[in-house]
Length: 397
Image (cartoon, rainbow, N blue to C red):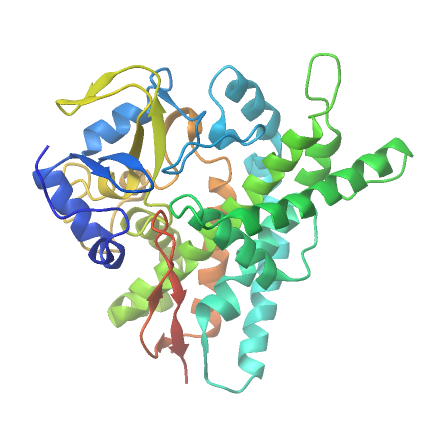
């Protein structure tokens, strides 16, 4: 391992992770970092990233995706086979394309309503993350779940805290408790309705609360059900909001790209995949090795936290021509080789919903705001695992 200027939370890495990852690939594809809070190996080589993702026997999820070891029964991000295999099979049906596509009318209706509100305000501009990108994924995911969240901003703060807690020891507790209370109330309500023979709301949450989970027809234990719902709520909110803002940021900072989308809205699907490749909302997550092993010629002691950089693999010049250039002319079949949704048995169950929400969100903006442009400086999300704009000011004529 070469000693280079890299740390997960260093300001220059937070500001420009792609440049930091490029430096890692060239000089130190397996990096070790020791801080007062954690010990962490970081893997940047695309070949090693894929190799780890494809070997769940060695690389475990049981101790959590963050830099600190954690446990959470019922959260698929903490599961290994055979528990993971059974739980993922149980969760699969609500995320099949047919189920996801049924949410499209509700997502499009909300996107149009948000666009109407922006037009009606008469301001000629907005902060796109707060006024549009933040509300849409929460509502679309809740349409799939069959739950109403009245205070979306409170929910967003809970989700932000939980994600930040993966890297910062003093963060995460309030969000975890808040979302946990919400999920528990919703599950207990549905189980009570079910026990009385009353009609349940449609959606994933009712499914998790009442569907048979074991061979004897028993339901998912309450703590596991709460953790399952909490994890999906956070994942659905954070990543899709960042997908929308990242995509809009890139095409608006290069007006010719925005003009291409306005002239040919069929390119929005390509833009979604290129954004996922170029600016993955999740830069990487951690695994823990069950046995001592070697990665890229570096010995990794048993039970080490290892961050697997999806974002670095997505800039692999062997897979993508001019990988550091955002383009709208890449073939979709090539683009979908990106690792924004991970790979292997832990490939994101919500990938279809994220893609659908992102596509509808951008199609609506292309249609309703063809003169949109950037109107000020953007700001990055705080969590080092994530990559997105928490501030994206825009204007239109």
